[in-house]
Image (cartoon, rainbow over all chains, first blue to last red; front, side, top):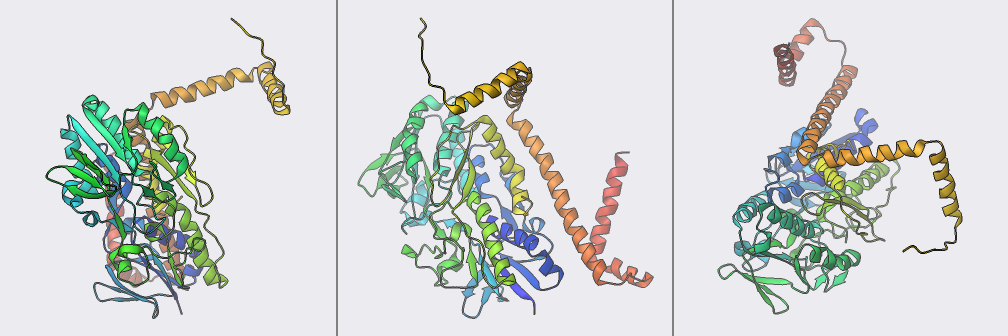
Length: 396
Length: 117
């Protein structure tokens, strides 16, 4: 009988998993032994990091959206259906359509979503670039901005040692904003204040979630006249008065609040009973080496939905996916997983509109900040506009 | 004002000096410096719109490769599974919506080439 592999989620993690699984398991597929199905709540695929460029009018947005079917190999059966129930005892996932999807192996790649409503007033008074709607809204505000203050805030999940989506994004966008305002000729009349919460994963009272970068940021910000403020954990926003309040008892006025809002896992995970995360955030308890959901022998996960300390970013998924597919192949071929994830994350950070900084780290070693370069920016651009789609298709 | 500085040469420094000396003596260093200069000039002269256009072309080629690879794998599997079709079998294949979609695409592709000739 055919073994069924079900992938829930059609984002970066789900798509890379599906296509790389097909490549890995081609002999089994040719022999008719394997069936791979993906369900997603959307027929389109969105490359989320592209929204950051939309916020500064460096992209329109449509460049980063494609038809999901066009990104999947033909061997992947694709259905648009929102997963509403995961039954890990009887090995099925139920779709909103009522259809039951049975599985022998399940991959949960449902990502995470912004939850600004978790901070009073943030939804009304704040802006963010983590979605295309949000990026388009803040782009219009930036275009009109002639003077005043842009306040950057960052919120972390309440569950300990879990990052928000794309850890470097607040730094990237602060530097992009500086360049954008210089281009517009209004930088001298706009104050940029970058704030960071008291507790951020491994660092307390710092400016970044890893110590080496946190220590180097003050000199970088000083060089471009960005003010910075540690220990400002956003707790409330007054959208009418345009004041941000911190848990530490401080308040700051703003004209634009460029926030990294709270993030939570997808609804189907939060209601599944599989997560033990605080405040019903929904992060899946994940074995840091095998990438299995803890306690479930035939359920794997990767990407933004895990409770690992590594970045919730495509540069993480690209490394996790090879481990995950090798482990599923190992289980099918030998009866046990064979690979181990070392926490590797590789990316190029956009440090301003024209500068790219390659970065890599793993469970053992933090990011070592290196100088950014024009060439680095071109490589990042190449990835955004072309190589990403090849990576999603399992071509690199 | 110049100052005399004494440096204790390490084994690695000596090795580097030997290799550099060889490059200088054989005239290769001039070429390598030219190469570095050309590379640097290329980076300097490249602009964001140029990179955007280049990567767009690469994406088109990769997408075409992906579609073709998928189609070839499918065709190989189907051909291996089925006998060579009879004339009636061919007509049955033509009745299939996906076949007609693919054929229409190929005909439009031919038309597109024709328009450029």
